[in-house]
Length: 177
Image 1 (cartoon, rainbow, N blue to C red):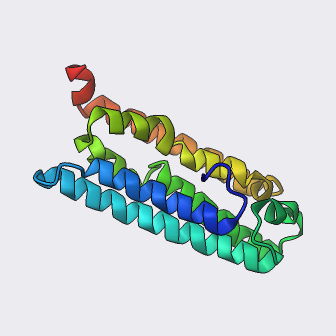
Image 2: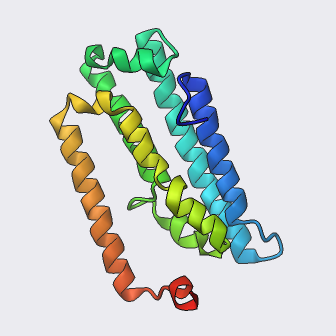
């Protein structure tokens, strides 16, 4: 629903629903304190992400006068520079939270309480939703080389920090597998 949505409200609602469903899967063992804590942490991150996305989409819809994502993207080149930067920041932070990029990686680290099928779903699709979001709204970013460079720097930094973390943190699931 999120990937196919052309209305900002449907897109934001699907984003929120996806986050709440994943938080529920992460904390599915109600009697296990660590699972409940991990689910609660993930829920907080996903609700924050959804609020940020909703605010950004509302701002874009209000400015362009259309609630259709295709209509917003058609007018991306005509956005006032200050508003374009605000939209870029909102979309970028939303994607960072969802994709667990540094410094929003704590929800992903705590999600190790999730069962393997939920973990597979999370890594194969859910974490990639940030990339889907950025791809979907690429016309807003495309006109600004500084924003594109910032995306690369943040992504590369998060990748290097994640790789460094793998060097010092044991991978229990891989050892079990």
